[in-house]
Image (cartoon, rainbow, N blue to C red; front, side, top):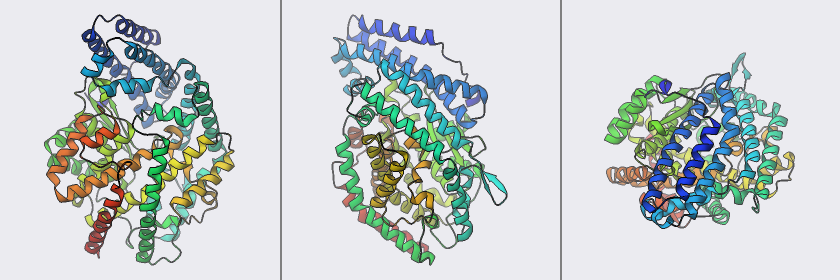
Length: 561
């Protein structure tokens, strides 16, 4: 079914509540384990239907935040999704309290019960806090989506500014860079106030629910069953030890290659004197080439991408009023993933169509799962599929770029350089929620202190950024607290796949597809094992892969020069 044919109907609150209550009663009164398992499967069908309505609203509102109908429907879900979550947790309690729980563990899996246990984090008293949180997230999203930046007599959104930030003329690039950050400076008080209220609402909610702090609450909400904040802190240290010195050295080499003695932050997007590689065509060209690429990659990926094209399941080009960023979601009652992006003529367009397609492919391969919770894995596992797909498609980059080696070098260097920034965002968020009473000024000051730990060579040459404002542009900080570390974990795992892929492409691709088929049926650590990967938290894999990544970069550099 095509995206525009997918019918949206606002859920009737009374009917939804009655359905949840009916399932709860059936679970409580199940005569045996078989009846309980069958009821859970029926409950999953209901979850998929309700979730699909929420996803349709989210996507259509993202595409045009000015659409009044979907803005109201988005408000409806902002208000009611916390109620749905609480109703879900009541059903979860009944399953967990059932005398036939062991049958569920045997037939569906212990991981399902672990996920239900995590869902209990949302109690009825959390509803008003979650509603307020959703409202604040929408305020931030709308501010970004409706950004308007005047530059050289024209008006741009934040996303549309992307190509200007990669201009080979240094003065023009710097001017565009300053214009972009001036938008955040002008809206500093608004964004500070939104975030300040977010932090307080989240902290108060966690305390009201009996948690030590919001960090403890959020880790459970994210279903992190394998690790806690201490393990994450230790992992950040591994990045600091192994990757930060490498990135500093790579930046020095980049500056020398460009002939820039006073290397600034706004110079980082320019890898080569003739500029950063750009795709050879527009959206239609990229989609056409991606179609051929995925058909060549494997039978499964070919079927997947043709399904996406045939059903109009991608919205890719940046437009006024469109929400920023990119994401993948799904309409599970239709067994259909959806890709949302903001193409702007940069190499990022190709990276997005591989990254988000990695998410979408995993969802496509997991749609045979009867249990709704098993279609998508937890966030850090989700990102393995997306970041790995970026590398598994390397052999086809010649179809997108005139000089594929320049793209590969830029892509890999950017992925390595991302890691110190990724842990910066995570470290900052831990500090924020450990110090919820900090002022906006104290937060910004602390952010700059932390980013200098992991990125000691930063030179912004911009007062707003030197005062700690860079995180204002990172939507995850506002909408998805503590998600960002997941990107870094998955990036290390994707590096493992890249190294293995260059040695044995067929075997590695088979391992990747098996991981995608597993969906969310296991926890993060167990999915790593299914994917035949080494755990970045519990092993020294960073020490192992660092010299191999350096060698790949050196070989690419030799080809370029």
